[in-house]
Length: 61
Image 1 (cartoon, rainbow, N blue to C red):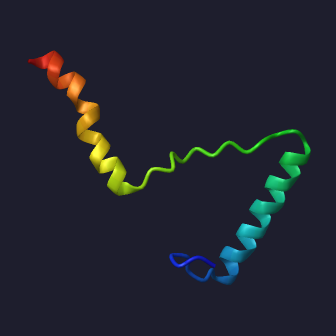
Image 2 (image 1 turned 90 degrees about the vertical axis):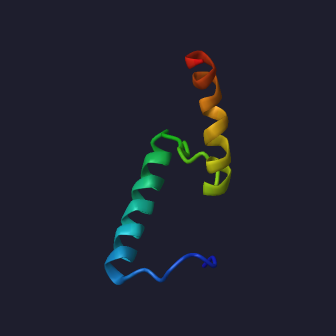
C-alpha cells in the first residue's frame, strides 16, 4: 500500500475484486486497458494553465 492510500472497507474490497474480475474477463475477450489520466500532477497543471491561455490572449489583443 502506498503512502497516500487508505484502507478499504469490506464493501469497497468486494467492489474492487468484482471490478478486477470484470477487467480480467474483458482483457481475455480482447479488450485492452487505455489509461485516461494524463499523469500530470496538480502543480504542473497549474503551471501549464497560463501557458495554454497565451494564444487566446494574443488573439484578443
